[in-house]
Length: 364
Ligand SMILES: *Cc1c(COP(=O)(O)O)cnc(C)c1O
Image (cartoon, rainbow, N blue to C red):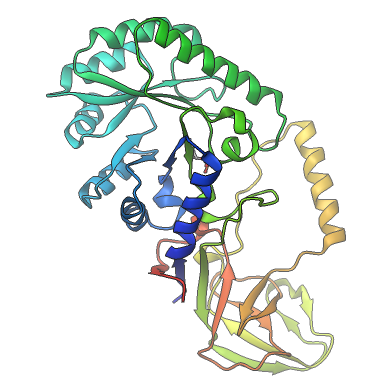
């Protein structure tokens, strides 16, 4: 069975690198989607040990999982919930709730036995959650009247923060600044003010406020040049199940996309896309401009000829033929190996199925 190996030394290194990039701002690690596949409970426990006090998740079930594990952390539930049953749980578990409407705030206030911490959420462009900026005064007046709610933060989320110098990011930042000012003017001390995610923090140092929310940087996977020294945190490992030698002119894998040019030694590894390896999110925008962009990127691939690969005894070994549901093949003509030897693959842990055991270890 493949195993996802998580290097806890690298993970804590990435937390430090984030804190260094954030300067005086507090880093709120985001542990949604099972901490991006790393395992939320274990990661939360590690972060708590490292001095983190507040983390954020997206779904109520994620917060419930952390609460059940009794991880000593404050948990901000970034998604605003509205139903009485959800709000009841939020209050009972002592979560920090995201508030996006007056009615929702009133319901939570009525259900709460004691004081509930809340972060007011504002929609400055994402279009999913939050008061609209012109509602800031109304939001301030409402929460001031609700004695069970204690505002400890105000936040918003960037919708288009993938490269530096994006105008819409600066517009969102300006709208957010306006919201924070309006709240103050109307008697609400905003507490933690946070707008930036990982890209916002690293690409727009001006957006920091006094807190930032960061998830993906903990994995050490950035989509741009890394000036901050993040480290890769995990790899998927599996044992070679068979080694065979094929003659020249032999096909490998489905659809005969690969034909050996010469006598080739092939290692078969029981890892495939059933484990989530080498699968990516499919395309979901179809504007003319996006299609052009895809075409351009696909044309670049022609020039770059990327090849999937694993690492075996410290050497890069290319995948040959198509990756199957449960198996793939590696060209190991130049590497001594035998069944039982371990091959590693750099993967996005988010894509690795929960069926792969997560194993945590410090730097060897
Ligand atoms: C996922 C998420 C983040 C963290 O984003 P990264 O790019 O992974 O740092 C921050 N805020 C919200 C609201 C999110 O959903």
